[in-house]
Amino acid sequence: MSQNQEFFMYRGYPLVRKGCQIYYGYMSEPFVVMLEIKHQVKLEDGMEIADKVNVYQMKTHETNPVKAIVKKSERSNLYEAVDLAHIWLKRTEMGDEKKSDKKVS
Image (cartoon, rainbow, N blue to C red; front, side, top):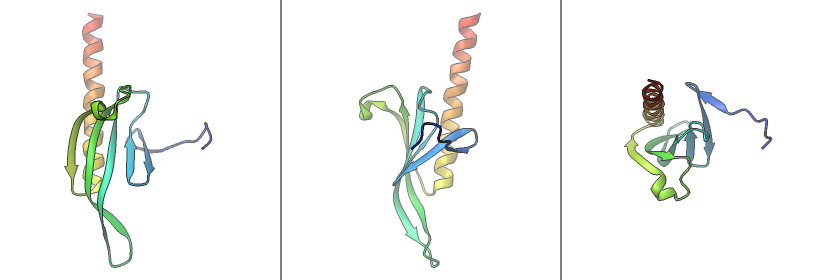
């Protein structure tokens, strides 16, 4: 992959898939969300859709992957999983803004 590669963006954050794992968010930020597709159902037309997705909010600067997980949940479809991931990232972003506002005062 080229260093100038642009990622697919969804609601202002990059969305990168590798196999059954999808990473949502910027690795340069304190947190990123990993979506892990645990089960898929095959439709009549042959298309597969996720019906069990684990969602993990992870610290980006933690080297131990087990310690990096700060929140986890399970959703019944990919849309709900990405929606939850977006909420988690926005909340941490807003929390950082509140902390920086307090420091300025």
